[in-house]
Length: 196
Length: 250
Image 1: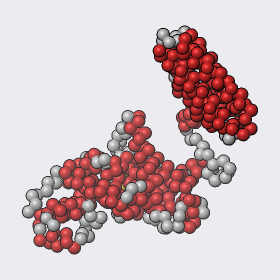
Image 2: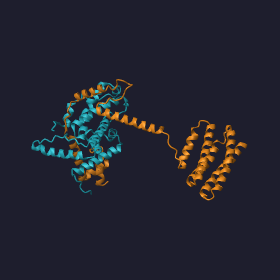
Image 3: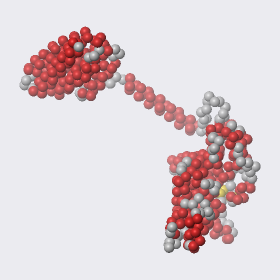
Image 4: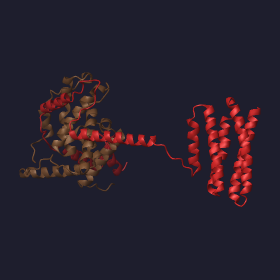
């Protein structure tokens, strides 16, 4: 199934954010308008992360929607010092973990369809191939490493923020990113030269 | 740091573009590590640029869907009834099966607990459990004493019957049981002043019992094991009698 693809940088313009930074104080009071702002502000980045993790846009849609619904249900319990972004990603990560568990239980792998692999002009062919190899290498990473690496690269999250989002420690987050990078370098056969 | 260590540092850096001073100095001097750093950086840049299928719904539609779900769930409608409503029939079915199973298990366990357990008369542990339950069930010291006296009587009668059958195993079991009963359990109640009358009666009864079991032991001289158990019962009776009398004199 071929999807229309949008590059991340162009996507930012779509959600051009009216995206005002959500107001935590209003959110805690259960303010629907503030919640709408939250959805508009984080919808895109959450979707992109989950879609890359699941490799399935339908699943990603459902998971993002679930994430926001769960977030709304818990929003009145937020503390004033809560890192909203990390908190939301943590909910999404939990939803994703459940999804992985259920998928394993049913033993039915959904087809990977995030990348559009339509044959393009010749000059794009090589770029497509590189992207495909890269995507395949990422897909082969263990779930936890993949989640950490994508948070670091796509969301530019600091290890401290990632630790909250993944429900782990800062050191574990750092280790996962390290292992993911190392594995990718090996998989993509980017060989190290002998050290001096 | 050598090249390997530098590359480890690159791989675990939060921001590959901003590395520690020591690493940066090494990179200036080492072209191979510089290439390695730029390769990792390039790889990350490519990952960042990977295309993702466009969302099926715009964020406005998503917002509407979410609000629709929130309204349907009616999350804040009732502070008294905060259970989540099930969206899927399957969830409801699972819950009802789980509730039914738990209820069934409770019923089975409850039923089993109500059925009185048969007394295990073949082991000291079984007899001990029977003794404990009989004595503990009594709600006053007097009733506890009565229960203890009744148990001793039962055990003595049983011992006599087993001895008549020459059943060495059961006579020995009764001897063990009576020894425990006439020591530990008598001692527990011996200090209760209100029981003086009953204690005197029991002491007299134990005195008779001692002589009776000594006589029985002499009759079973052909079976030394039975005789030995009967002597033990006699000695335990004598010992209990003496302790009771001492307590009554005090």
